[in-house]
Length: 195
Length: 195
DNA sequence: TCTATCATGTAACCAGTTACATGATTTT
DNA sequence: AAAATCATGTAACTGGTTACATGATAGA
Image (tube, rainbow over all chains, first blue to last red; front, side, top):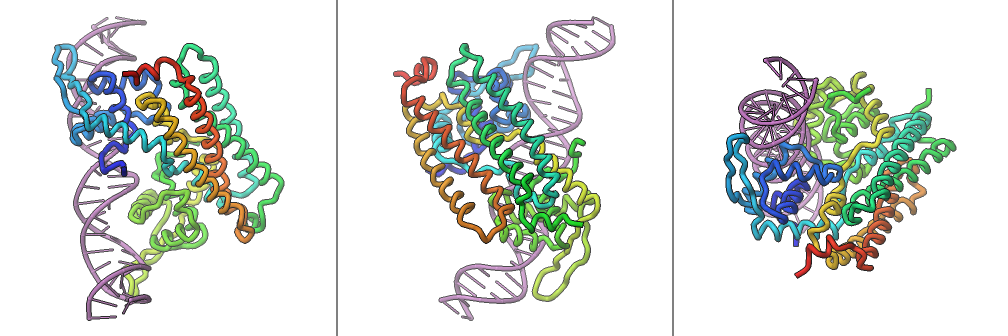
């Protein structure tokens, strides 16, 4: 039930397991595929990290080396395949991730928690800048999600999700900005910035 | 302009700087205050990490030791105070965080990007579980934000923000669930799970 | 042929976490 | 007075990142 002590807490590890369902691959191939499918938008990817998680997954028995290719124009490439425990782990992690929201700590939330260190007037202007940036992001996402009948919808849901969040944030930022601008911020905050 | 190479990428570092504006403090006091003000909800806090970031901030000249208290019923406690570069850095980081959205990688987005590894039927059920969880979260947040006239509004905006995001996610999850349930998921996904 | 870029990997570094340590205070 | 908890910190581990390395291929 509890998604065990296993190392696959790393989203990148999930990708590896998920891709290896399709066929055995060597690490570099996994990385290439990840980029081809634009998963770096949703899953943080550094190519050195890939070799790391592959090692971890091997260590924990979720994948295993299947063969080592040796031709002269590449370094050795080890091809890995999913093990049965690996497939089980993948499914369990996926189920948990979909069904149970995990607590995240977005940086903007941290900033809001400390907002009183900036004077209200400036905050209003900064929020305005953010609002514009979010507008642009939303625009791009809408393009991406919209104009593609050639891509299966199921491959766009990450973007739809992102779009939903960006829109919500944009609306909230606007509300907040207006509240600040209307000067209803209360004595406490204002008093911290009086001279 | 670019919020330099400095170590204060860590949100916890921001808290330290922000709190030290009020008065010099020793690390343990910072931690206590952080919890009293419920900032652990918005900023990940491990007490050992606190000592780490304090060291980093000292190393980088953003804070400095002011005195070392030595009474017999505590270990030595070093009191730190903000330096002028520290105050500047704090303000710059805050401005950047408020004005410029940073790319985050929420786990649920990763899961959505890999959703095809689970069969659509099961996904619908899992989404339903998530929907319920989000409903509860929203309920709690609403209580927290609502029933408090005694707390200054500015100290609740992190929660308001969170609430806005949770609500948006809930709505999106519901849309997605319905789409899956209506069986419009397309051949690709379904074919991966036929036997 | 020189330079850039791809393909592929290793190594060194550092941030953040878990676990341990220890004296005081409070509860049972 | 034993057990639990608070107060305060250090140390060891490990995951992830940045930086380095090296041969092949492709443009200029």
